[in-house]
Image (tube, rainbow over all chains, first blue to last red; front, side, top):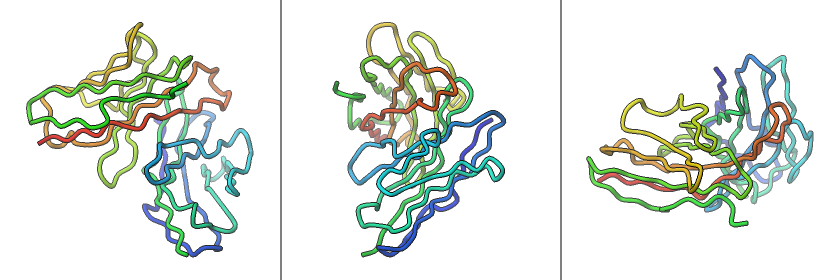
Length: 108
Length: 118
């Protein structure tokens, strides 16, 4: 079975502070991990994927197989980062499982 | 390319009625996923389909719920004899048919269908 855990429902940080959204996964095979974001009144959309090792809007995420984690980080939060963030795992047969999401609130 | 289209956007049903939610994937996408989002909760996987084939329906309730993705036309999520607990937002997403392990299985989401059961 594949599972994604996001332990925080809500994360509040001040503008300019560092952000870390936690994601842990459980999967017996080789996982493909993604972060999706949903801004207010917009559709859920891809933010970044582990295989690309990219930085999008200042966010990065490193896959740590030893800790089975894929935490999302940004050194300096901006107000426009306020949104709902979902960690997702693609496992067997390309089934995509999402975590319960973390709402990021950036306080001006 | 209009993206993933879901309709209706809002649907109101009385207990015992049937609800049908439709999803047209992006052009060129052969895989469709359905997720349910209850108030204050995240996305819960329901079912994953290819054309004319259900690949994984492990998240579907055993009774009253069914899904199809016919050769022609949209994917349909059908809920029979709805109950108040079925009230939720139902999201559809599509992806191309990619080699597993490519890391490119990115989902494109629709705007969702909000079902309210009175």
